Amino acid sequence: MPKGQPLSDESSGRFPSLSVILFALAIALVLVLDYRSAGRGEPAYIFGPVEGVVEAAAPPSVPLVDLVKDSLAAAGFDATTFVEDKDETGAPRFRVPTALDRQAPLGKAFEKRLQKNRSRVVKKDKVESAERVEFVWSVRRGAEESVLVVFDCPAPKPVAKKETKRRPARPGQVALVVDDMGNSLDALEDVLSLNRPLTIAVLPYTPYAKQTAEAAYANGLEVLLHLPLESLNGQDLGEFTEGMITSRMNELEITQALTTELALIPHIVGVNNHMGSKFSAERRLMATILPTLRERGLFFLDSVTVGRSVAYEEALRQGLAAARRDVFLDADNDPARVRDRLLELFRVAQRHGRAIGICHPFVETLRTLKESFPLIESYGLEAVPVSRLVRR
Picture (cartoon, rainbow, N blue to C red):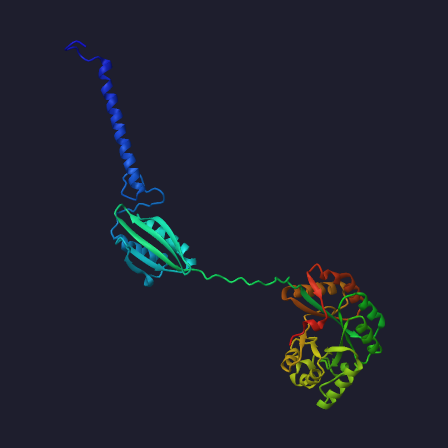
């Protein structure tokens, strides 16, 4: 270019473009430096804290050691157990005793407290031994301040494994007692045809009492004496049942009547009460018959003909094996209700593992049992003799 010749328009336009480029580079550098400061938890003027670091509104006003101590206490660690010392390099250190199962949730709360105060955990180590598990955390704020936190946890005790054979869960058990037996051999045939381990309770002065007991025993069924005891319905009602033991008898008369009736029924393993709403509600009266049963090794089944019966409790008190009826199946002759109560008996056994039901040899009841008792398998239950469910 000749000397003194003015710059062309093309040459003069290069300088403004170069200035823009340099200015943009300067801005980019500032942004990069600011972003890096934010990432280290240091003051940043453009970018906020990154990677979970929350920038405080004001610069820290307390030493990091105090901040760590306060944050540990606020997170739920017991401040009275902290041990403050220094590590091998002279850096401050907190040793925090805690349970192993509490370290993780409380440690998370501790980290959150640190983040809110522009501090963070930069390193986590775990040291295990047979006695202890130590979690070593390095806490930093900025480039200068750092504190070690050691969570000191007792190691879990090893559980000795016992080599035991796992037993299958035993199904719930149902015992069903058929009362008032001895009046009909046809009823006995119907009971036997059910092919279930039912228990029959035989009235002592019925025409087929002995024959019924012999046949039931021969077919593997348990036999009870169905002992007539006085009812609250009045003396007149009781007098129509032969062999009724009443409160008007003295102790000798009661014992003699009981002994006679026990001898009438062969193969008995226990006794349950026929009627007896008055007799079974009075402890004094029950105490006159139970010793004889205990001497003969018989159990007593409380038919619970009255809600305030004390027969079961008194039997246990006197050392007899005893049981209580749970569900009464046939207070009426409605087959639908008999079926409902049978299913209720099954549900009781499911809830409690055992249940005892009582019914009578009514035609409707026996027909319903033949149709519905097989449902016991669908309830996961087992039919058993009543002696399997007595308590001692």
